[in-house]
Image (tube, rainbow, N blue to C red; front, side):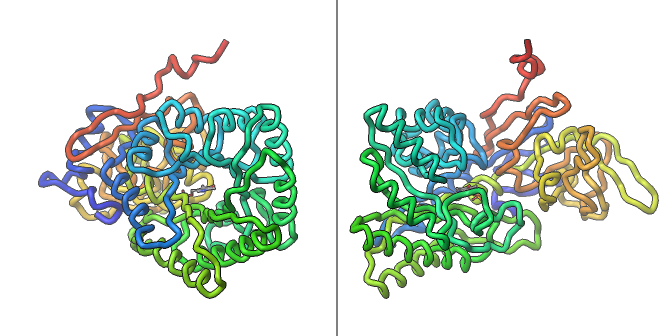
Length: 431
Ligand SMILES: *Cc1c(COP(=O)(O)O)cnc(C)c1O
């Protein structure tokens, strides 16, 4: 099927993922249920890694853990040789517990706490990506108190509009993330860092947004970043060699979204960098990218059980499911597109217009409005595609709905990688 090649329909007309019948998975593990295809995740990791072959500066993908993080995902990213982008003490803690090699961990975030900076430093993460001058000062003080040297890069706002949803567009100047280029803020920050004995500058970073379909904004950002690297290297007589271009590579959420081939996408950007460096007499930098959604997004589907089917004549059909905004807050957050199907009727035509509603006490608790699915009936399993990123990791427990389990499927086998939250766990910290 269109979302990933391991999603198929069997002879009974049931939706399958990596050869596992989704109606059986629902029966075995209960719903709502997140199901992730391990082979898709590993294929994506390898495709990104392979994209760097032949690029003279070398480089590697760092998995943006915020898209989907649990111990098993950290272990998979480690096995595939990826680095890891973490943005909080909690994400770092997960990586540590999973045994992720700290020399491949990059610590991000626009407002890291003192405690988090110390944790990152004491655990020897490879790089702390500085967001602002207060953070630089705080890190410098912590490093000197601990007698350590902190390796840093700077998050730069290259001023590129990535033509995506406003809420997830972050490359422009009006953004809470990073140092501005055009005001000289970034340049001043480098100067300050160079005056700190316990700070070592290893690179520059930008992240221009998410769900970007076009290489042009990346190429433009790369050019602006290379200009800046060239400028600081020559003005300060330093030799910074790492350019981190962030993540944001798009995935398919609907049939009309274009197909996306990540290795040729990345290669195109790398070619641009090579040409630029060639023309400007620069040595090609090591390039890092930070794919999150594009590694985990299309690998995942969510299974729900259909409850009430309500027809409001002349208005719409509400199809209520046993999950909703708690396990997938992306529709209520920014009206994200999704495609759904009735898992037991996946071979039937989609001739029913449904508004898929969750079970929270919020009118906006919807997964999709007026979308075409097969005729749904009470008790049917409903599958929503491309939910592998920013669903489990964004899940909440509003209305005291326990977080669903995550099941990993791999070539016909399935295993739980995150247990379903229990009612006892919901009250665990209540006193
Ligand atoms: C969110 C984020 C990513 C990952 O974005 P995707 O759209 O999931 O690829 C990478 N780097 C940074 C700094 C981010 O904030």
